[in-house]
Length: 95
Image 1 (cartoon, rainbow, N blue to C red):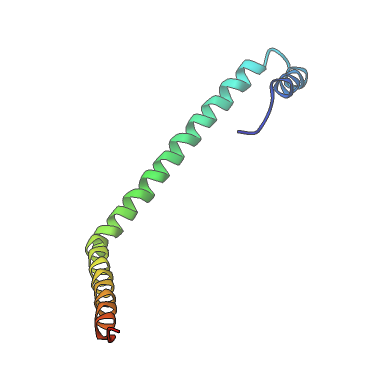
Image 2: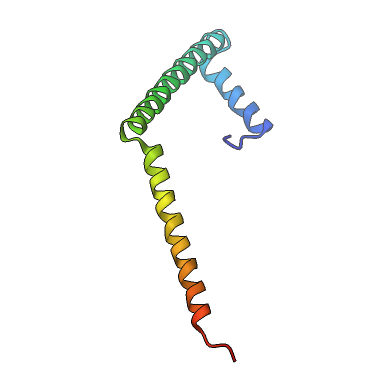
């Protein structure tokens, strides 16, 4: 994730032990873990809210019907273009 190797992690841990102290390190790790868990729960809740809002918007706009209408219009346009090509090739005189 952060592209930190084993040696770099050992150096960071050694600095943490010196700066924070061995007695406070477990308490700090526990606090960081709790904070990270709270962050993940908050992020998951936010993501769920955004997805629910997007789904509600999708249903209120009826995007599925709109996609079908656009698909149908595109298919008709393609069919018309193919039909015009067939007409043009049929109208050419045969030698």
